Amino acid sequence: MFSSFTKKKLSDNQVANVFINGIFDSVDKGFAEVAAMINEDSVFVTSPNISSADSGQFGLIVIVGNLSFLESTFESDQAARVEQLIFEKLARIYEMSVGDFQNMIRDYQSFIMRVNHPSKNWIYGMSKAIFHKYGLSEFQDEYFKRMQAPNPLFLKRMDEVMANFVWNWDAFFKKFRI
Image (cartoon, rainbow, N blue to C red; front, side, top):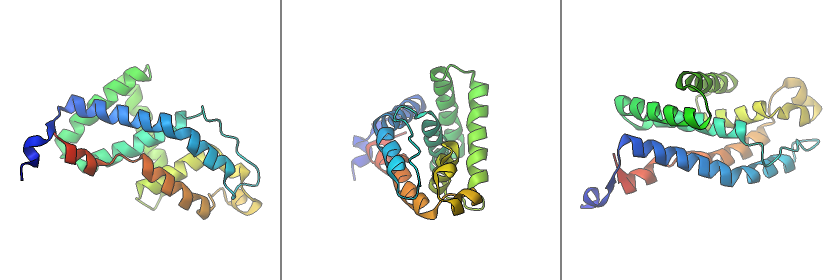
């Protein structure tokens, strides 16, 4: 009954900071494990040998996926404000103009939607994007390599992994109010 009084109120700027810090923290702490899982996956004939330091593409995929969930979590005007703040902050981090950063994010969104078509499941799309961005097709058996498509067993395992990198808005709203 009194939970709305005990929740900490955050501004849009604070939400953007929490979002960015949470994403970077999860990627920094989790990518080495993700790379090891990919390198050891039994669907690959040879190991892709993804370096635990090669988290750049993964980080952008996680950012794009989470931004897509952000848009469906907030009212449209608040989502736009928070997203703009996120773009401004990330553009500084990536040492890009806000416009260039937004274009890069939109390109990633388009790429994920394209490789994921006709599905609209963003987690599945994020898994497929990782497959393509890290060039994993060349490490598969001949059948899937010729098809240029991920082995469904790999995608199923990757979906389970990627679900751990999606922002938990329910838990967030239990602690905070905007």
